[in-house]
Length: 435
Image 1 (spheres, one colour):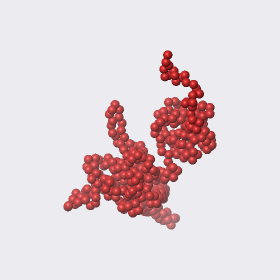
Image 2: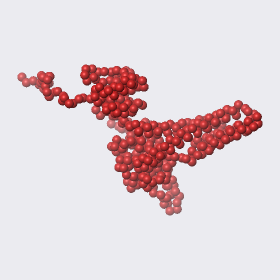
Image 3: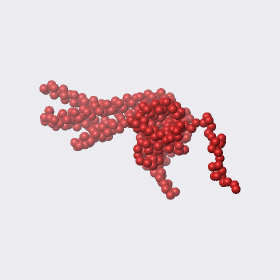
Image 4: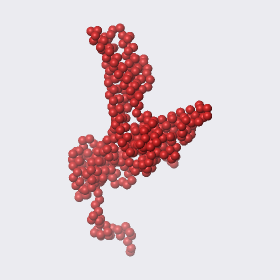
């Protein structure tokens, strides 16, 4: 009686040479790591005892585990977090293979309670799954430049918050002002002058309060503007010495700040298959939802890197307004001739779509063009694109239209601050002379 295949498989001897692994082939140990500030949870299968080890390490002990490399080269799988880049580079330094997985994937595969041991075990199991989406590990230099861009974005946000605080202080007292830090400081100076002029008692409490509040506003605004200008000057000098940034500055309306942001965020164009992949990485593409075979295309997602999306949108708005201005000038002209070369693609889309949709479409095309320029290593060519005329002729040329650095606006704000400080200094001097 013939045995079936399953029975024949069980009847094979245990010492069959075909089932033995090669002597030189060593399966790497997969280490699942749940990172934290003080303690790190590690989960792996010990190759000697074949037991699952799930224990807690201190930072020094975990660093020693990576440095000793007791189990040879390990595949260290960790969840994406604030310290994953540091530990990933440290793993690479000691000869291990770092793998960073998004937190959404870890959360979706965790079937137990939320604690360090279960998280580490879940991350360890994800290390065996094929085709799992990974987070790209950035180099130390790229991480430093990312920190510079994040700091600049934080300073700009702080300056906006302070300007809104000044406008709120004035609006509570019935005074309105225009947008911008310069208008806020000028209106504050005028309000202080009017308030002091109306006071009969020159040594009243209100005068002292206004002096303290306005002086604090001036000191904060000066510190913020000084820090912003220092970081901006550093980025401009870095972009001027970077070959990739000089290539990107041949694209219309892209100046040193935006060029540096794209180079830092992209890091290497070979990481992306095409320009569309980089546009999706920047989240400048619409997202969709669907079920039952029905897919609905939605708008631009709020997720993604905030400062790269803001810079791309500002550049796109500048290009859009340039095209609309040229259209208006062409209609007003007697011969209806455009003053400079115009983008028919932007003009046709502006006639059918609202401004923000057109700006997002331009930002998407800028991502694709930026990837094409950096991947080919050649300057922007007008004939190959549907954008407007380039701002410079070659990578070594001088930028003609760059609105990233507004030195005139900075000078106006500083003049308004100095004028307000001079007002209070003169008032204190008069008070001392009267005493």
